[in-house]
Image 1: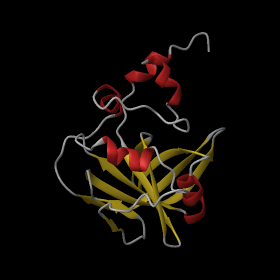
Image 2: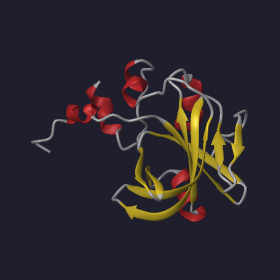
Image 3: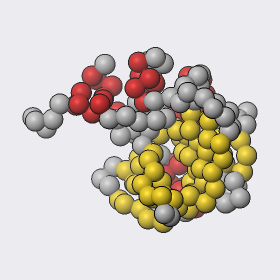
Image 4: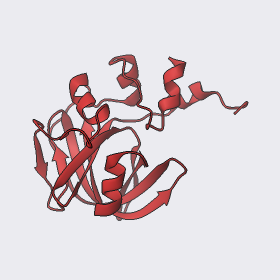
Length: 174
């Protein structure tokens, strides 16, 4: 990587999201910054998650996921519940306000401005991650609020990327 300046990656803009799923009544979710709309007809979004994460395993089996868009004012304790703990050890949805979409995925209401439910229509296997492409089946707008960007997560909230995040290598640049 002699010709790659990792600082250049900070010029890409990202939001911050809770990506969740439901497999046979088992809810799980995680913090992600890799979510984007990729088409409008049909309306599709994509997210890319580490293969080691429980959320990835459950989405692979359930074929559905939701994306909840985090507000800028979200406290680090909320981010920590979904981002720094494993659903193998805790119920990430304990004490979290959410509603179930018609498709059966949890749409997080706490600290979120909007949420989407999607059915997986394609996956792309990457070396360490899986890219899920989902057709949006439902969306809800909760409220007007400034949204948390990945840059603000680091500069304002002083957050770090966990080992399984695609941006983990950026921690050393701070």
